[in-house]
Length: 292
Ligand SMILES: NC(=O)C1=CN([C@@H]2O[C@H](COP(=O)(O)OP(=O)(O)OC[C@H]3O[C@@H](n4cnc5c(N)ncnc54)[C@H](O)[C@@H]3O)[C@@H](O)[C@H]2O)C=CC1
Ligand SMILES: CC(=O)C(=O)O
Image 1 (cartoon, rainbow, N blue to C red):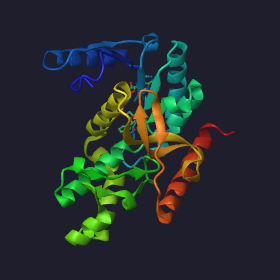
Image 2: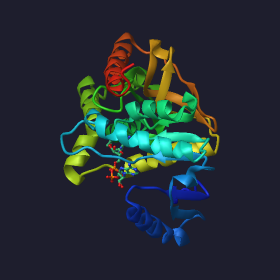
Image 3: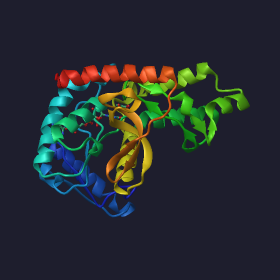
Image 4: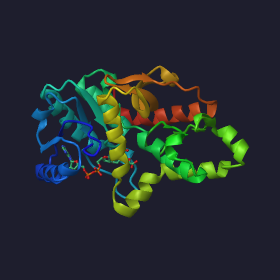
């Protein structure tokens, strides 16, 4: 956020206030090398006039633990955080990254009482970036010219939308026809690496943070600058893709109003079936927090 000059003020709130103070001090020492920003360790009253509150607080996965395993701990934390933010008088946009992100984005919507388009989950923004990186590496093409989405749960039931991948405008099918690659086997391996990336990184360094930080900065910027950018995020579905009452990863237009529109891609039947399976898993998880 600091490097990208995304905002004029950044408040860090953490139950561990000393950590927030340390982070604020550390970031302030980068100000001479970046754009101007006011950064401090604050409390929930600072959310009163904030444009955006990004929630990243809570437990992360231990090695081998799934995102859905975190639900009980993090739902309780969210109830207290979202309640405190709303008590400040906050009337902006929430962006949620804590896992399981789709379930906690739904919880933020419920606990805040704000309209659903003002609650955005990071969803599959990172997974889509991972897919673009992996495909770009395989094909030796700049990932910025690889257009590809992961949809569904940010987690084990997510799916690659191969039917809508294009390389610099060329549909994947045509690219494969012209270049004789990548094979289906290679595509399967790429997807597995994407889906399991967090496990692989957590095994090596305990947590993931650079990729998601850049994804959150991108999302925040899209809102603050009213970009109307299409990003794969977690949105409440209200009939799109034949689904209701679930926050799930889909491409959506992001603007100053939050989620302006869910982009409804024409999926192949197999993709749609996988998306529905993913939604079923998320709905069951949501039901453990909101039984009715
Ligand atoms: N959506 C995504 O793509 C990603 C999500 N994550 C998720 O983000 C979450 C945080 O992960 P890390 O930053 O690695 O964990 P971390 O342990 O480094 O940081 C979590 C922070 O939350 C604070 N915290 C805990 N309870 C709190 C409360 N009640 N109020 C305020 N602050 C509280 C802790 O003091 C700690 O500083 C995890 O759930 C993780 O799975 C992480 C990476 C990617
Ligand atoms: C931790 C996590 O959700 C990720 O890196 O994808």
